[in-house]
Picture 1 (cartoon, rainbow, N blue to C red):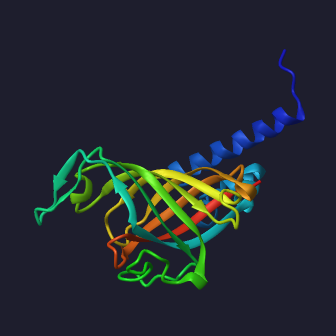
Picture 2: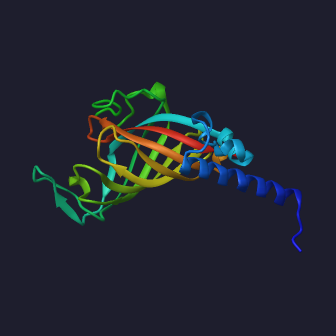
Picture 3: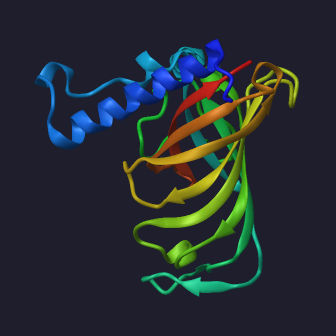
Amino acid sequence: MQKFTSQSIRHAIRQTLFAAAAASALFGFGTPAHSAVDAASIDPQRAEHRRQKKVIEFDVSENAKRFIFDETPMTKDKQGKEVPGDGNEFKSEGYIYAPGTLRGDGDGVNPDGSPQYPDKLIGRWYCWGYHVGNGGATETGPWVITHQLYDFGDKVGSKSITTAGLELVDIGVPIKRAISGGTGPYDEARGEVVQHMIGFNGLSGANLRYRVYVKTN
């Protein structure tokens, strides 16, 4: 004989509500004001999960003097210049600025590789991975798959977030990255990041804008 507990009863109620919501959406039952059910209003754990998420925003300007790639494979762009090809491994570094610091094109890093806005500097950006698609000759869509480290602490590694995902060459087109971990207040970090390429700086490094949705401990 099945043993009924308060937990199993609550589970049964939730399942019934979800089934009713699905039927309403499928067959058009109910009034327009109640034709959809917010899952967070039914599932307290999901509502709590949403409340715990923190939003962090910042800009990044890549220091192309710290962009190092493998000797092979290489390909040629439409100007005939040799650039890293599909599968070419690389690493790069850059500066994390307060949100809204960068204009988009042309600014972020001085000609000597130093930060252009030291008073707005809030961390360091590290990136490593592989070129995909047509590598450095890609004109639209994904061109690299990477891990990224955003290091915000006064002491290296004391306050950081790591992410993984594809990156787009397209200006202004958002792409999501998965948060894979962190340190300090982010040692149990989970969530996602929305990255936009907003242009290139004077050293031809990428200028990027980030919005991080992170669940912290």
